[in-house]
Figure 1 (cartoon, rainbow, N blue to C red):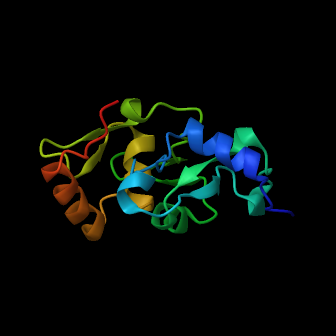
Figure 2 (figure 1 turned 30 degrees about the vertical axis):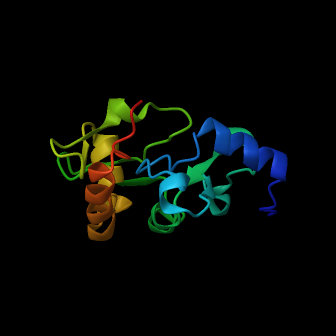
Figure 3 (figure 1 turned 120 degrees about the vertical axis):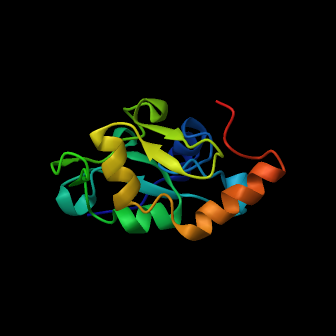
Length: 141
């Protein structure tokens, strides 16, 4: 399995993703480090290295996702598919809490993704608080 991704394809995906993590919406411009290319369906599960199966993710969301495509929804107790940032709309599955520091899952997919990827990890919540002060967060779109 080759994980080589040509520069042109990496750049295209980065542009499509607005250069931010598809899961936690952290921006490359804020953290000062490039996002990783995530295989939405991991190669270990047969996912291909092609545009339709690739999206940007920050290293921590990508590390927590690992080779999973599903996780437990804490409300229903069911195993559900993780959020797919290429084919699903973020605001249909998630929203920001009142102060903008925590992501809330609105659907089984959203809730399972928030927990599985540790989207509200303490270090990121603390960073979001600082980003709010300088009006860098939450994303305006």
